[in-house]
Length: 228
View 1 (cartoon, helix red, strand yellow):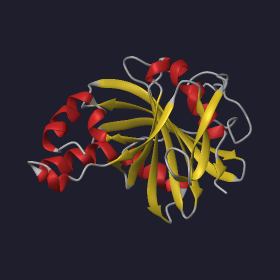
View 2 (view 1 turned 120 degrees about the vertical axis):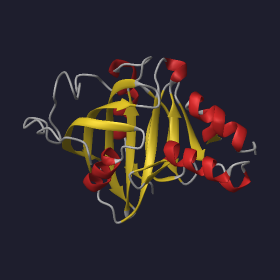
View 3 (view 1 turned 45 degrees about the vertical axis):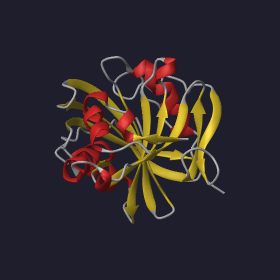
């Protein structure tokens, strides 16, 4: 099953649905000295006291939902779907369609590849972004946060993380989304695999808080494995 982007971000994508036929400015704060890989940081901003959700299936790999060079578990009630970008050249206004696709699915040199939908369980969306080759995890996160096309990231903090044989970097930041006019905290883990970086990103919203999102996020990033 695939997610066509016109079904997301209703205010913006309602316009894209009419166009396409169906078919770092971040100010880095010092990382907690007590939060390297393997330790815990209770409370804001990391909330390590929140446990992973129960798993119900997996995504990634060659055969599962969202083909990726890694696999990761999916929380119970959440659904993973590949993100397919509509062809802007088939739109009534190709230039406008291309601009809107760029806003929704391109950020800091990364492209949205997978979306895990948790709205049925009171959560939001976990999205997986992929960079071009030879971009290390920290550089991928720096570029992602520095892209101000949809939001201005501030209060960024970083720490090293590991998951099985994957080594990466985790970030958290606060941002203002001009499109939706809301302030929210985000978390992202970037790991290097198969010559590129994958970013697993989750964000608070007006309807979701960290307690709604982090169990599914923790499950996914702590369960990351190289696809065999």
